Amino acid sequence: PVIDKKNLITGTGREIIITGWSPKEKVYNKLKDLELDFAVIGNLYSPMLGLEGIFINLLANPYDWSISTLEELRQDLISPGVAALHEFFKRNYYRDKDRYVITNDSRDIVGGFDANVFKPEHLNWLIETYSNINRYYRCIDLIQGLKQRAEIKTPLKRLQEPVFIEIKRIERKTIPGRPISHQVIESTINEAYVKALYLVMNHGKEDNNKAAVRKEILCLTSCITNDPGFVSDRSKDTNNDGLSQYIDTVINAQVKLTDSEVSYVYGDRIRDYRGIDQIEKTCNLLIENPLSTRLYIDLWQVEKDLGADNPPCLTNVWLRLIDKQLILTAAFRSHDIFNAYKPNLIALRSLQDLIVNKVNEISDSKIQPGAIFISSLSAHVYSNCYDLANQELSKAQKTPKSYDDPVGNFIIKWESGIGPLVVEQIAPKGSLVKLYIGHTVTKIVTDILDTNPSIDKYHLAYLVQELMKADSYKDSYIQDIC
Image 1 (cartoon, rainbow, N blue to C red):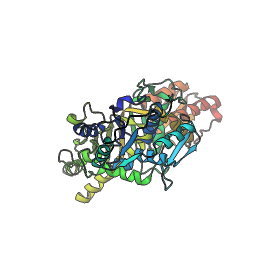
Image 2: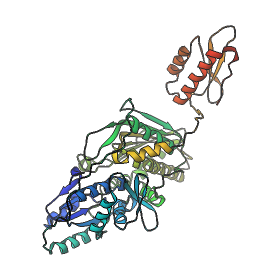
Image 3: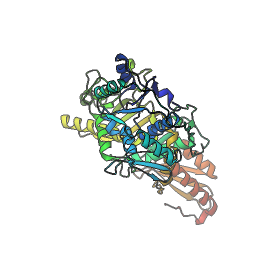
Image 4: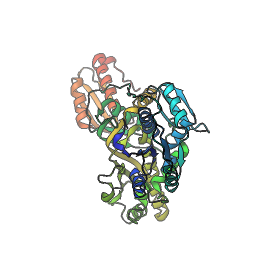
């Protein structure tokens, strides 16, 4: 392989095995026990991150491989990377500007890849050469197929000269700023997503890991204050049914069909953590002590996860009841902002709703879901999603801010005959809480910032604009209430 080497297990055979969400190590161990050889074993669980890699590797190694896919787990249906590969080989794809879009027979979008990377002749050769790809839904059937083909002893044959492709990305320049500790506070999941994506794309530091180049900021904190649930304007490649299935894997334990079950399905860790249903336990604790600070849901298992190739991204959830509102805080050790941010938050909102409904049903507590706080320790966007991320930011609707700021409102006056600027700070409920007086805009703005460090930045920009006008117009100044 010439790309994604770190995430693949290589052998000396002719079988390329794409494992989907099944851990590649468990598939490898089964083949090793049976002394079955292979060429390479690896995951392909994301259509945006997986397809380009396997295409590039096949073009660089143009032999008569036998390719098999394993789609044993439910997650392979929810994030249909393997399905996208099969649809590609059926020629169910079309070009949309700088992107090839892959659909299924129902015309649902199931994946895509960068149109700037591959020439049409590359894609035609791949389809003509490897369209007889084997598809398995159980590991036992995959092994049986490998056994049958192992009896046919033919030498590996090179089909054409290797084609080496260099991926060139349209970069978004990094704007000077902190690569750590940014904060997003918005009222909806979609607004928070756009802001988080903007921060990573503009201030993220690009790493040098050739296996997966990405822009990253550390310790991104998001707060969604008042989202009613699902986002209304999902991107066109988000499948509603797939999203519903993903939510189910977060809030419910999944049926384990085989011992190759993926080790980090969130619902299993939440609902069956060493035999403990953490949702049920949390609800009981909340009813017993509404002021408890011990409502903690753990998804990290040291013996399984420390040093593992694919440990859970979501590591813990903490809940706190304040003024009859259940606040949810979650930590992600690794957070793919472009692909996973919105689905993650929607699923966490569903988890929050589930706990609220269970508590109200058992105790008639009449609590409500409150804000959601997300700590993204590594917030990143992968390089082969840069173009899509830039498009997402470009089409994000620019709406005027309403300045529904918790610090309140500010009324600006110019005191005739006295000279200083006067600003009244009015609490959201309407009462006067502070008076700011100064002869310069700088003095007023500094005092407001010192007193209100959490002021909305757009609100502050508006205040500076209005204070400058007041200082210039003096007696004729009338505040623009936008």
